[in-house]
Image (cartoon, rainbow, N blue to C red; front, side, top):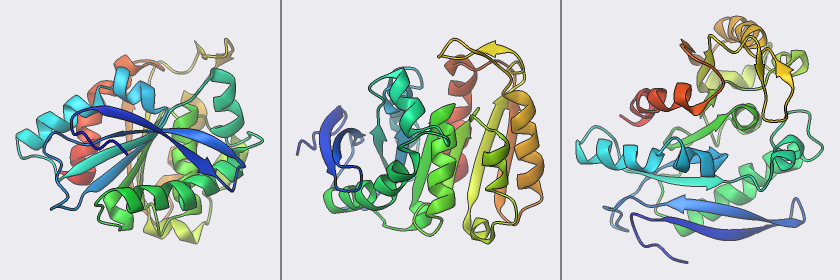
Length: 241
């Protein structure tokens, strides 16, 4: 397994739970050394976090400026838009099994191959849109493994919101939730008109009343990386600063 620091690598992980193979991307900072233990950021839609969010550059800069704890990135890219609907969407046919894959198999892979801190608060799940919904799903299902999650503009519906109501496992969670002020009427990647702002505000009302650490931000902008990218630094410093 290639552990050359400062490069985005790709490998394949076989899942017994799902009965198929998945691509896994990972990035070790230029200063990576087996002498130290690291926090882990797990990104869903990982190719977008690298390409549009330039998250690895941000981590290098913050670490160089001594603003960020030692951190590596591991991610799951999506092979197609249709795939995201089946695996990342809360209503997708493979959603629950894929949550189990992340909670058990991906997490085990990470801790077996990298020098990690192996604590719930040393892991941070990240996703945007459907991948943001997925990050929240994983945290809800495995709060003792992943206590921290960021969701940029997640897909939210009534059934998804209900999962957060009176859920005692949420007491362990530290969530960061954003939505764009211009997301009340936009065209999704699937070409459908959507209002994400209204249901995300409803989710915010529910989460504000629950016993968890919770940060909610309404960002100026739409359902695009131009809105999300500037917020990444705040998120990283919030959790690992």
